[in-house]
Amino acid sequence: MKISAVIIAFNEEAKIADAVRSVGWADEVVVVDSESTDATRVIAQSLGARVIVRAWPGFSKQKQFAVDAAANEWIFSLDADERATDELRDEILSLNEPDVAGYTIPRLSFYMGRAIRHGNWYPDRQLRLFDRRRARWKDVAIHESVEVNAGESVGKLRSDILHYTFEGIRHHADMIANRYAPLSAEEMNAKGRRASIAQIVFGGPIAFIATYIFKLGFLDGLPGFCIAVFAAYNVFLKHLLLREMQK
Image 1 (cartoon, rainbow, N blue to C red):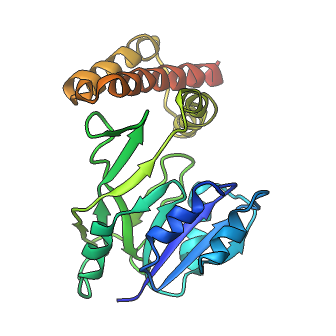
Image 2: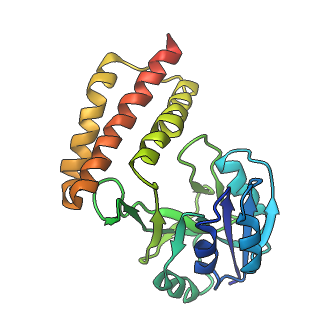
């Protein structure tokens, strides 16, 4: 089967080269650039990627645009801060014409210089290899994901996508305060969900205990503790913002 690797990017000159190189085995690489002001496009083109410039419409819409712009029906979707491992490449290239709509792939994230293998962060399976005739990106404001058509089945691959996530503690905190929590609150509000005092008071501590204790986040050392704290902060803030919207 022929595969198109698709990547969305905005001002990713420090990361785009490694992302493109990691999918150099694909039959084509498509980079959809959201009007970067740095060298993202030049670097991607120099590595053989087909670059399309398009104004930013949101994550799901941009990723679906990249899928629709690809030349092949089978799509491998990657973010600019992710890498396909050699083991994943070999596993994908060994597939015969599949009888499934797509495959989930475990994603291994790196945080504070450490691979995170516990908590909510691993295996963090993502449906990233799929037949675009039988699956598409779900149009949501946050936590976008690929959704297969009704009645379709999904397989599992063993090898990892590597995810080089937040660039530091400040970046992590900023992303929660300015993206994750506000967008989650807006989505919950649109669905008619209400924020209770109990959710605001107890939601954060429950998230911390679940992440750090029950999901073994403590085995990831200090990074695991920080992840659990930020998980609690995200839950607290999104419910507080939801309540503010409803007041």
